[in-house]
Image (cartoon, rainbow over all chains, first blue to last red; front, side, top):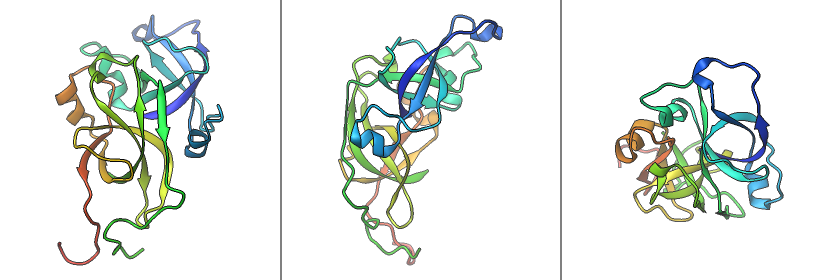
Length: 109
Length: 91
């Protein structure tokens, strides 16, 4: 799952039958610098995410991508490759000030 | 599968029911030199990884599907805690 900020809702005029009734969010994925800064910016390339949790605009969510995004529709099928798995209450993101070598530290690069 | 570093934790009240009770961590994928790359990802951890831990993350959603249920919208899981990464013969 990646993290993203909900920027809006997508309303369809016409859709394939399998998508009927599916709520769609427009989501701005969060980059590491923006997540660390908690500045309200996303910074990724926006994508459309299927949803059952009804987040507000501005809410941070986590979304799953790939085949697993259609799991909630099982045993039905949906042409969905991104799905809102959870609404984030709080992220405690504290990357180290500097990257360190891998443990063991013997990889030749 | 890839190496990742645990850089944070995440709490969520409203989530897919299959994710209730799961431990969710924020990770960054690592290059061979240990530098972090790409966007942060949320991973499901059942092994007890800690902040700063180096872990192996699998993108095989079947692992979580078997444990959390067929409808679970989750894919990335911690499948190993890394002790050391070496380039010599087998440890």
